[in-house]
Length: 464
Image 1 (spheres, rainbow, N blue to C red):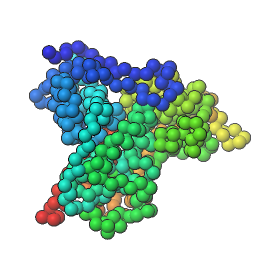
Image 2: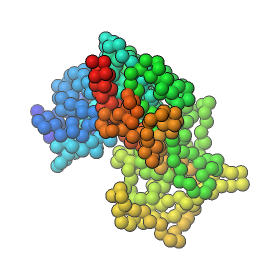
Image 3: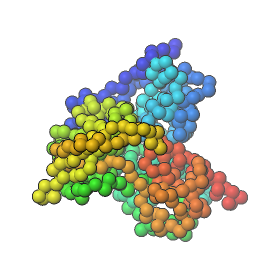
């Protein structure tokens, strides 16, 4: 019998007053019974509108039908046929604007909890299956992948399944890209990322860390090593700042540095080799998911007051609704319709305040959002001793500057010819944040998937 409950099964979570003092995962996951019951809310629509909202085209009704039957391994087989990182996607994808946003149940009630079910199935497989992935027969061709973030991991996995000898080159000492340095433990436990990467290694993917493409080795040299194609999935890790006075003071961080110290270097642990400032009053400038991550991390480090300073209103926040709700529950203070104009310092060069100005919303700008306008005479000083800038990132220019023929746009993003990811350099493909600028994990995965298909077609045609 279908479950016609208008509301999805709630996700069990840690209590806000407990979780804002630890880095353990906030969401606790469905039980077996919860998952089966939620899966029975799916109407198994013949036109599958939810699939059209998935950048990696998972057969969503098929995997949910398996869950409803209690066949969790069958459900995992459906998921893993399209997604290299189901346990990750089930946790961090913006399902509400993608697959769940297309769900028919969502027209008159709440959509099916597709992301929660994906997470459950991936976790079930990890905890109950000891079977290792079968290594495909080699096809005799080599491909290099630059970057071990979501786009690079997806491209590498799809190519390995086709028999390619794939080597991932990662600049940092730990693979995972933004999954390990950017997203906090309380949203995405790093053991899960390591497990997903281990699965790719079982397929035959090699991972070389501490390799900076453009410095340690160039793309031209990768071709000299016998690679027939290269995929660039190097992300967008170059932080942006506002250019206001005081940004060079001690206590001003980019969100990238702040989160990397915490997530990758474990600076929140006692005795960490890479320390982080434990501030009393913290201001995070920006309104996206990264800003929420930084603010919630600062709260867990012991800050008494953590402010989100954003120049538009609550309705315009680009962060996921769930992340905003969790931040509010955890005591983050939202100072919307405000914008910093100066960082103030003391006699020792430390942050001691932030001068802000109130904003109001005018007519829509080119993005379709109402343009923030300063309110004359509304300046005030916010008492903070730490400021974290989270206003976006752009790709590192190192690869572009060391690769002849590789063109980028005015934002430093690599130019491609469309969905297949081919760049202006022959046999060099790119995808993810290196092409789009900072975006979502699942969009990067979709780009990696499309590029892997195009690379396979290119190499086959070249060797026909």
